[in-house]
Length: 267
Image 1 (cartoon, helix red, strand yellow):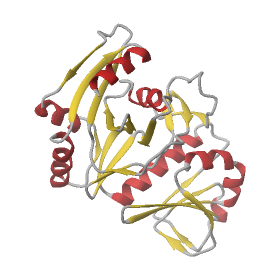
Image 2 (tube, one colour):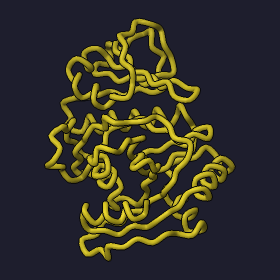
Image 3 (cartoon, helix red, strand yellow):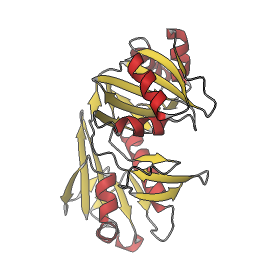
Image 4 (cartoon, one colour):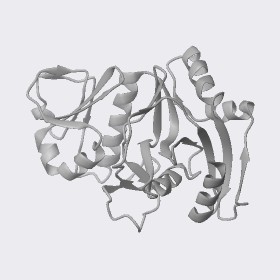
């Protein structure tokens, strides 16, 4: 059994992978869990995520909190494995989760939020390719005990990036949209605050413009991007912490050059 561990704040995230499954897909798992530490494990462990291929070979020493069978003959197995990882992290942390990306660019902590198809992940990928950016995470951002946490998980793009050959795999999501999975190698685990919140709108006929938001509008848009929260009291505290202490901007653009031009002007 292979064990991947990330120690973050005051909690351990532990993902165990059956030997046969790991050996068969070693390159994929090493890239997906790049920010985790890998160990060969024979210990009795509990409260982990267990990924396996053969149910009959489940290690009896493991008492998993979550488990997922990975049928690698199914072309979507990687998508389901990634979903299992994020669901396990959600259960372990039980904290407010924002649907978006968070990264550091030009020494500024950026939180990128928006509806589906708004261009969040594409913007994050383009910024990361500038080589001066560091990724916290894409898709799920966790607000845990006053820290903003990420796990450096891969970016899932709907369009192939022809400038990046370091692709992990190709899969389909629940809506049967094709997803190209790219690794994130330059990562950080936590930040304590956010400088700029960006709500992107990628449009072919964009106005190529941006507008700063009031605190009221910022709070409303943050609430629209909540993926999960344990209770309303915690949600209120977390949203106020971010929304009242950060600048927020709506950005409408049609190409990467204009996106960077406006981003640098904002920063």
